[in-house]
Length: 365
Image (cartoon, rainbow, N blue to C red; front, side):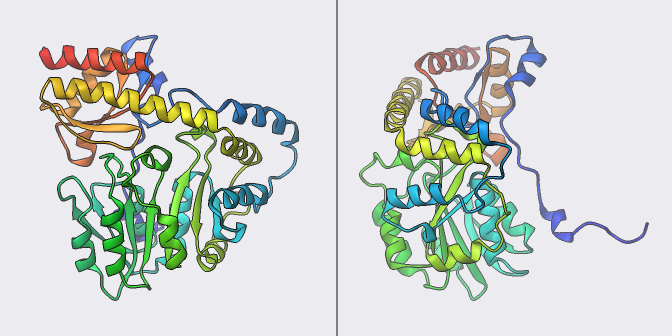
């Protein structure tokens, strides 16, 4: 067959590499007890209220879910003093990112983002035939000044991951305010705040809802996966202007958030106790890892997410494999071009100590 059946945009796409599954490591190394500190999941498990909500809603799965997720939208809107018309929900943050690109990017349109940051920004734009402008991190942060210089007539979207994944650090309120003031009003700024609940404890973290109130071409992405502990059922959401939400609604799959996920997300919004416990444990885990890195003169980036980025001075592929042999899964930095760096999710105190002891044995060997 002579004709090319596939869209040419697919040539530029690279599959996302998820964290290694526990079952695969167990089978490969013959280890029963595996601690997965690779995918920024909640070590306390799901919100108990979410589990209860899922059990109740399971009796109704013969019915299609509410396509508009109206109860969930209204609950989210109530949290942030918005209306349901400002909210779009999706099957995880990934789907909302795809919807954003489908809404704004035509062939040849440009998007600006950091290198290194969450890779699905690039994938979603390239999939629509867009052009990527990536700028290296500057002092481990988004080069916001460089972003402004890159803006041109073809620029549609600027992606700001805050805290940045996989680095974990934040851009401060002053940095963001200064940047936003320099961006033309007709350019969309997307703030990916998947780790919002962890980051907002830092008094310097910006409140982007204030930006949205003054600047309609603003999108704020958040998720229930992290602090809610419901990553397995996929619920993310967007806070934005009514006009953008209306346009994004045109590319939304009809039943994109299932009924169990909607019920669980509603319950997470009410489970303040679980969220508080999760955030508290997160910073206890970070503190223990930071102490180990400090004591051993290992470079790391100060994190306000539920993971930390650290330089062990040894190629991360080797450390990654040796840690798996000891029952710990992390994310090796070579996946992002940072050969000697690791991204390690926070865990329970026991999980964190197991990682520290295993890493110490590897580095001393």
